[in-house]
Image 1 (spheres, rainbow, N blue to C red):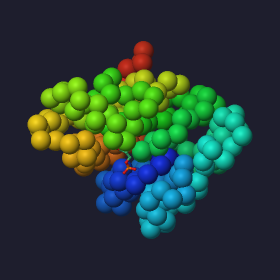
Image 2: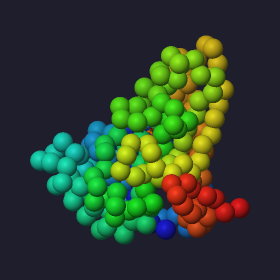
Image 3: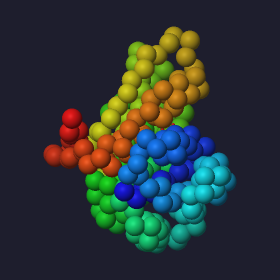
Image 4: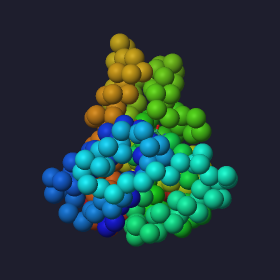
Length: 207
Ligand code: GAR
């Protein structure tokens, strides 16, 4: 299965996927390309260090969403992508990409959806919001991407308990390490093993 990973930042989730592929845990996964929304993203260096082809496609270099959407669609189809993984990718995908890759795009979000998600909820913000609300658990969610922010079928979630001494930064770090970096590679593996079906906006995993 050809996987293209879209990134915008540090790329710790990308690294978790690369590590599992290198360890032979995902024999059916072929990391064919990394696409970054920013050339300065450290995730690009991770791709380079691991000899994975990468390119930068930045929304702000296109005159409008339509041109951006076309360029992203061309990059994905040129790479023969079977699955698109948003691993800390912070740009919105256009309607052509979302419909061409219906049920073939997954995203990792750093909260338990439907809490602390939606437009503007990215990076540190879901953790700030979780602490401000005083929730006792938080975590991460892998979901399929549809045309609305964070609303596609939920595939995997993992929770952790919040400590009263947590700061947004400590919570973010713990969730990245113990939730995101575990469930994102697992989600890819489940899809590669053909164990996921989607019905009525719900994802089901074959045991
Ligand atoms: C991760 O925490 C990811 O869940 C979050 O951005 C971070 C990227 O880290 N994504 C979102 O907030 C999307 N709404 P990384 O670049 O080190 O993988």
